[in-house]
Length: 442
Ligand SMILES: [Zn+2]
Image (tube, rainbow, N blue to C red; front, side, top):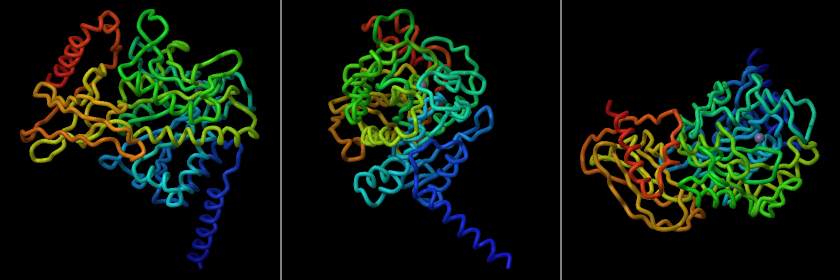
């Protein structure tokens, strides 16, 4: 009978998928194997995972993302979104494989390991093993040094391809970059890392600067970024030692991106400036594409760091902004005093905000542009172990306040800041607010 034949094949298919999910080898997974693995994990853990493609590469390969969590298919109010992106340089391959092992570890530890269970119950974790599948396939054999596989099929470096906060980036935006930009726009990402190779260091924003600033390009959240980078380096088997590769040394295994070398159009600056997401760049191997027999060691060296870093998404303070009737107000600017983001951080469609801050006392300012502000002093405890940031809601006493979407300019934002002394910075912030209001109410 037709049915029983199909049913039999279904069973065989599911068994095959389960066996794929059960046995993840330490080897390189090319496009078909990578897809088969991700589909197998989803089939084996359908309620814990959500597999989707956020777009296609130039050569038409899917850009797969596996989301994991208690509610993997959609955002839940109060649950922060986290992401890992690997292999944006196609010839830097360690991240691609260790993210598959991270997936394996997360799904097999759920409901067995109490820490991983709490992490997945309270966090939505998005994992993109490769942002540049074409570049990976173009790199035929393991090679420690730079190859053409770094670039996408059009020869563009994807980590130079994003809009830049400091200067006009003339590179034409590639399909892989556009897919990631859309993804960032559609999710409220709070924390993220992108995984590279060719060095051993955790590098943090900014990568660029206007003019010729000497040595260090500091963001308003420099303390948080240093903490995030150190969380990774000190939980890594050796990164914290700062030996780097060859003759490079990085004290404590971290560096400001610009201090190391200046680059334009990088993904981490884009996330921080326009995505409201704190991202760092992890360089995980001196050899960009090491032999497969070293992958198991790379996974062991990075496992604890990958988990501890995800937990940091629960730093700081989060909450919802509502009107008197409890309706959420989107696009309210919510920031900690003294830390102005030049493109201000705004509440999402559910009126939610997430601010990564180290323990301490802060004044949080919620502003409906052109209407009014509300200030609250908060005492942020050291609570990443609780898997929840401090909760602080804001309720405006009016009804039906609407805050129109304030679109952030796509052109360089920080140029004027360089001219400003520390004393004039608040004025500049007001100028920026006024610009946002003008855009909002035009
Ligand atoms: Zn790279």
